[in-house]
Image 1 (tube, rainbow, N blue to C red):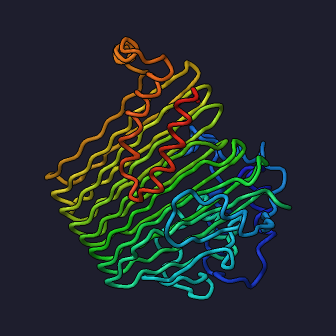
Image 2 (cartoon, rainbow, N blue to C red):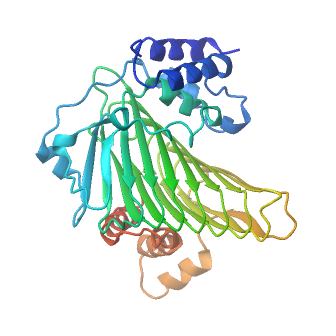
Image 3 (tube, rainbow, N blue to C red):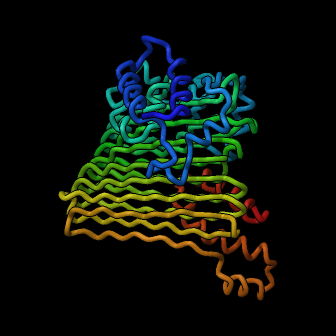
Length: 425
């Protein structure tokens, strides 16, 4: 049975969905699910370290959907990182802004989900996987459907720029659906920006299908205001001989929950997940990952690293499932953390569930402080304390940033990280 808080939030969301709107079947099934399941309670295992529902109750006073902000091309350009070359898709409080975007359509097609109505919607990110997927199913107004046809290589990256702001409401629901057909390749960059410091709740769902022998790189930067509450659900279906690589860098926010799932559906496919969380203040970031090996001769690689200062908190929960038919699986998972303050906390839980008997799988985690001997070595050679510390921390974080596939985006993130490390957070 749902709590009073759950009911208040859900009633407010449901009251804003117009009757007879698009995606009625998906909305109805999701409504039924949430009426029984509700939003995550404190005692729920998957959310026991991240009380999103309580945070929403305490921080959001208006659960109305945020209206579009007054944007112009100058505002958009000011939030595009330097040296970017590629197509730009602009989202204004979750709504696609075609007139402010720059779209070449070289190698792909783009439409609103309501216009294309692909059957994939809600089939990759299933309602029962997470209550916030169901909430997005009910509440999102529309979304973008991006398709890369067979044998196409999109030469330049596609930047998804989300400009968010509390505006006559504090709730934003974004929806992205990506279909990459066989023998294709594409790189996505995602950047979420807060236009001011006002509190809002962003609930986003991204569904990605990676066709046979295709390659998809998805690079994401989270650097919103200190008052942002965010839930991201990204779900991928990866087919035979395909490669999907995710790089996620989380730098700011109030409470952030990232759910990333890779479904390895055939032989020869590969899933890579790299994450960095560099936290200070009271920022709370929770990364929940899931890799499902269902067929033989597939591999996955996962490396998440965290640096936590002040009273920040990090959570890592990584699950790898190896099904009985998934012989010859090769799976690696590692989570490493450095705590720079006695008040910083990290909860880490790498997990393996293996039903096959001919596999190579490993997982592990470490949590500690900076190496005092290495720090002494650098200081003995003329470096100041902060410079030496920054150098060691950058060496620790660089292993993740090296996997960012676009050079300009990588340089942008590296500059932000270096400035943070050099300024003692």
